[in-house]
Length: 236
Ligand SMILES: Nc1ncnc2c1ncn2[C@@H]1O[C@H](COP(=O)(O)OP(=O)(O)OP(=O)(O)O)[C@@H](O)[C@H]1O
Ligand SMILES: [Mg+2]
Image (cartoon, rainbow, N blue to C red; front, top):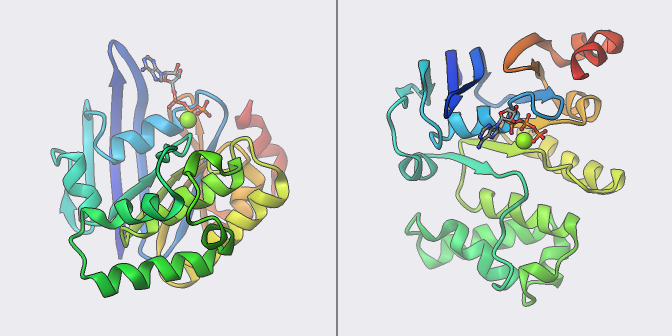
């Protein structure tokens, strides 16, 4: 069963059409990578799926429902949660409070909130060590972990991440991608958008290569990795 299905998505920003007919399908429990160069339209795609940008044409189904006209804030509550490019954590708020407000809109019982918090502290122990300090004092890698954990506090059915590797050292990227692989193994469906194509495809089940607002190539990630030259050609 697919949890997300996009058909013939056309998205414009102002006068400029950025996405020209995207077809994308994500099976429940899969880790799907969308890779592409600077300006290929990756962020635009995620913003359209999150309903932060209007569709000019095409359809969008999430969890069996047509969400083409659904407001973004309702979607997050129904399990479509995005970790935005640049992380957007609240710098003046403590690490722990950043996590708590992630789940704030769900109206959880205190015990469930504490369980979710403890689960994230186990996933990224550094967040537990730093729980009392302002989010803005964390390193880039720690801030990315916080952004991922904050999204997970919302109990996503589909977790979408926009270039979590940006500006991070390769070891930190490996750590974060390892956590994504574990999440997928635990049944969380993931849409990972990345410029570091090969690292992303290595942890993905299925991959799409985006070029100038179009899907240039797609298939099972191991098949795509078999021909690196082909992928490189589209990454420009
Ligand atoms: N607010 C905007 N107004 C006009 N054009 C925009 C706007 N935002 C993005 N674009 C254009 O849309 C295209 C796709 O941008 P997008 O941010 O989706 O790319 P991206 O793949 O996420 O790139 P990056 O890897 O740099 O984050 C680019 O050509 C960009 O210039
Ligand atoms: Mg982007």
